[in-house]
Image (cartoon, rainbow, N blue to C red; front, side):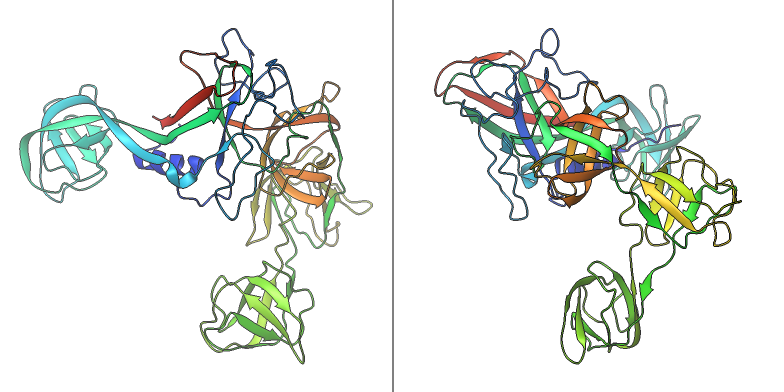
Length: 466
């Protein structure tokens, strides 16, 4: 049974999707599309970017121009936050804080009802067309009340009644959560052919010289990640990685962001730290070498005098991600504990637990072999420009039958021309990289044929969840 997403949940979900709270590192980019991927250019749920769909207005032909700089006046992104730099992209970078996200309620049933203050039940004249999840308003019903259960003519609400009421008119219905954005204008300097509609992508760092260039990327096997000291129990679907920690002697003063250590060996940024006087949840920001002791900078002030032993924990799961293949380095004569084609399906960073999609066939320990390998494929493409966290669509090349074409998030960039993804990528062969489509809409009276310098297209965005 699927979970019901209440209006308040829809509200927060949509705020996250459009980044109206500015908590997601990447805003959305508004783009136009010049394509006729179906009869009338109407977006379909199964659509993905390709050489035939959702390419942008590069030139007067309206044909594929991937890899070329637009000559139509189609704008290059102008950044609007200090922590973002997506000027290699084209379109209009939206400002998350300018979205107006709200829930609009629509009554389905109106009836009379009664209730008592502080109680979670009401009695109504009729429950016809009333369903669990409907909002309830009117009378003395509490704010933001919804239907939790129905028993005869008695209805259980999610909040207590605000006052006593009798035979009062009550509305029951559903809410549509909508995000709207101020009108945006594309002004062209030359012909750009037909524009069928617009779409939104999560901003990424991929330059136009890379975006959509057919078969320009290569997918190949990546060097596996080995984890020694791993443990696991036969019949279970998880393994535990070896705890790697460093325990230098520490000292420091209250309200400072620093602690002195007698040795900074093994200490790196983002490690979790515990110890007397150190704030709960503190992590390493940086290390400053000195004499006689090194100084470790933390992201939280010390809550007391720092003394004794400090424990710095390595995040041993940080180079493991969902979808990686898992194999067991079992010793001669022992049973391989991990079935072929086993994949990672979950990660508990704090407890160092990795969840698998198959059960263990043997114990994993020193006696059977405690090394476990995590593998994936990597993408090689010159000057891809991508950084960890960028969201893109990877389309498998025509000769690549093992890579799944899908939306991926960049996981690591171990070299200038190399990146890995989450979920982990598999397979080998060529691939094409695109910005990933999140929302799309056809112009109501489109397509609009851009022919002259000064021609404009104005877009007002509305996204809804119901």
